[in-house]
Length: 137
Image 1 (cartoon, one colour):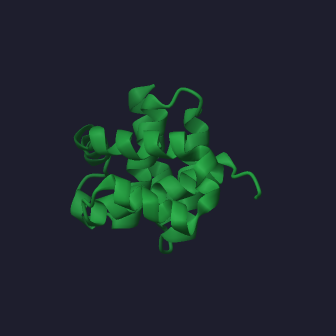
Image 2 (cartoon, rainbow, N blue to C red):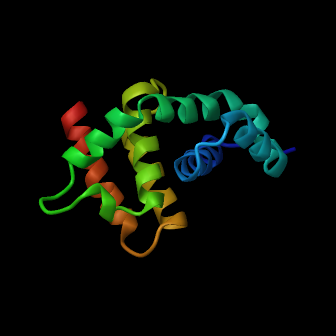
C-alpha cells in the first residue's frame, strides 16, 4: 500500500470535519467509515484524529475567529459548509499543530477549496485565512 502524504491525510481530515458539521455522529463510527473507504489513512490516523478532535474541541473559538475576520456586511451564514469546514481545519492547524507552518495550512486549505468548493471559494478562503493569520501571529 502506498504511503499517504500529509496532504492526503489533511484531505481525509477535512472530510471528517465536514461530516461532523453535518451530523454530530459518534466520531468513532465516522473514523471507522473513513478507514473502510480509505485504508491508507491508518498511517496518519494520529494526525487525522488530532485535527478532527481539535476542531471539535475548539469549534467556538475557530468560528469566532472566522466571524471576526469576515468583511463588513458578511455573516457566517453566507459561507458554504465546505469553506467553513476547510477554514476551521486550517485555523486549527495554524494555532495548534506545531509541525505545520501557517503558510502550508493556508495553501493546503486553498487546494481543498479548489477541489471541493465552488467557483471563487478558494480566493475567499485564502483572503480570510490571511486575515486570521495576521491576527494570531
